[in-house]
Amino acid sequence: MTSVAGLGWDPVTRTWTTASNAGVTKVPPLDGQLIVDVPPAFTDASRDMGRMVHRTPGAVLKPGSVQDVGRMVALCREHRIPVAAQGAGHTTYGQRLVGENGLAIDMRTLDGIEPVRRNRVVCEAGALWSDVVITLAEQGFRFRGGLTGYLNLTVGGTLSVGGISPNYQCGAQVDAVERIQVVTGQGHTLWASAAENRDVFAGALAGLGQVGIITQAELALAPLPQRVHTWSVPYSTAADAFRAMRTVMTQNVLDEVYCTVRPPEHDAQPTFLVQLAYYEVDATPPRNIVDTLLAPIEPEHYETKTYLDHVTLDTAVIDGWPVWENRIKPWFDVFLPDSSAEAFVENTIKAMTAADWSQPHGQGFVLLFPHRADRFRRERLRVPRQRSDEFVWLFDVLNSGSTMPSQEEVEQMLTRNAQWLDTAREAGGTLYPIGSQQRTNELWQRHYGPDWQDVLNTKARLDPAGILTPGVGIGIHATT
Image (cartoon, rainbow, N blue to C red; front, side, top):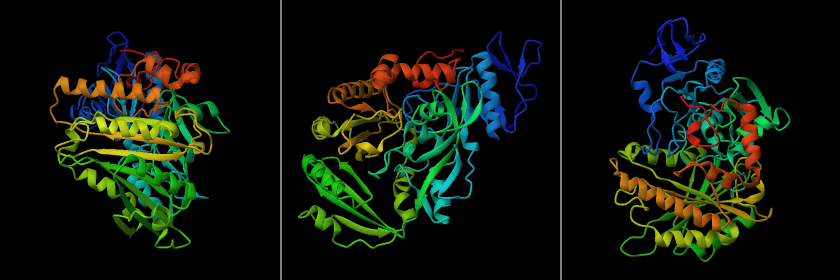
């Protein structure tokens, strides 16, 4: 694949063109490739993991440098061409997509990882977390902010939405970011932190790509554990599982706490499998640590493994699922306050259908991640307001359906998600926006609440032409 000689933008027809007419604006010199005429390059850029929304861009940029991103965003701002940065594609309802004649930027060509310095590492936004964890482990470190279960995601992708891990004391991944490099919607490239260009830092982390494209990130690190001790503890009711997780978290001993919910079998009740992990760095935990905390329940499984074996397990499982990529994935994801989380989870699970449980193929998850409320510090990640000593719970129904869904199947799942979200909001919950919802300004206004005007003002200042990430549906965007 190569860029086309003389490639440019025709402002009259509002299309990318190889013509060299007088009115055509030529594309600036690039270190990478701008592709307009190689159909395979558009297949991935036209879809996401949800497989429910498809939009084909007019051009795909495979940047060879951060400067390429800045050059092309500046061109697109001048001509009001929509732009969407794309990573590994793990959104589910078109958040990463850009419409006809827009520009899709494949960030995966910017995948550099610098050597660790002073317990920090700088990664390019297109680096996969699966590569980051291996590179850090070779130098004796891990990312302090915790890891998502599936690791073949880009650094820029998870930092744009928040990034939630089982590490309940860490907050979100964005809370362990020291600095970011961002190309704003004006085409300006700058570094931002809590002390420098703070509005960019606050607006870009978990900001859904609305004020700029994250191109590099400086991440805080922690020592690599010598071993990881893991336990799986089964419970027959949500109440017992919640009680156990709260007990563990109040002790501040373990490093990971979350719950996977197994579907009911033969008219039995679902099983709430509480997953626990302890990172052995300097001291070996007592073998009966979970027995002490959770007695009289016996762990279903106990294992000791390396850190890399531990964090890569889910990725290997998912990548081994047949036809997984082509199934629709109408995900539902919501944060819940501690006071109502148990009732919401219990009532929702009771009402779940076989399709909600990803039956009959079983390629899906129902998950529950508790976190300390006071560890979430980034402004754009909306979590329920809680006291500092309370917990926030992320509840995920990550189901998948058929490979050739009917429109009725898609609409049923979207209706389900909207109804669940309304109920969650009544219970004080907030949306975690990686899933499948009909996105409107009304949805976002409710989502951001009193900060909605600040969201719009920051976008207007940093993306004045409204070109960035139109698939999210916030504010007024440029159109082709």
